[in-house]
Length: 137
Image 1 (tube, rainbow, N blue to C red):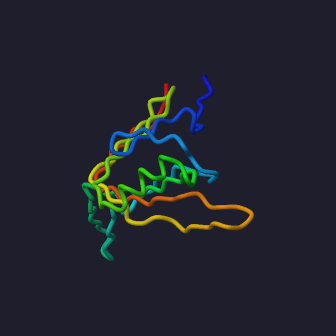
Image 2: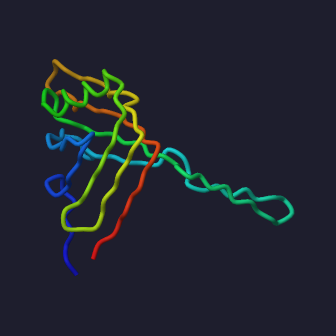
């Protein structure tokens, strides 16, 4: 069994075709989470149940970038222009990859400047359509 490497050096991320590489100091510079459940189970009092499936549960994504970087300036320009976002992520050496489309940058993160430390530039994205493939060899 091989050891898989999930460091940022082994991950290729693109936003609208541009590769993003200048990550910030965050413990998790790339964070992806579901917006809605993929399925809901409604249980009746008589013992029956109904399943409700959602075609596109969507995904919430946060990217933490190095402040002052060209990548952050690029993301800020997409945010300012209300651009529609397409996102991809692939881990080199594994079969893990995702593609998210029909996205918007819903907000940027808090900004801390002028002290002993500064914050990463964060961009919060929500994507309507999401296809993910996890796994390995």
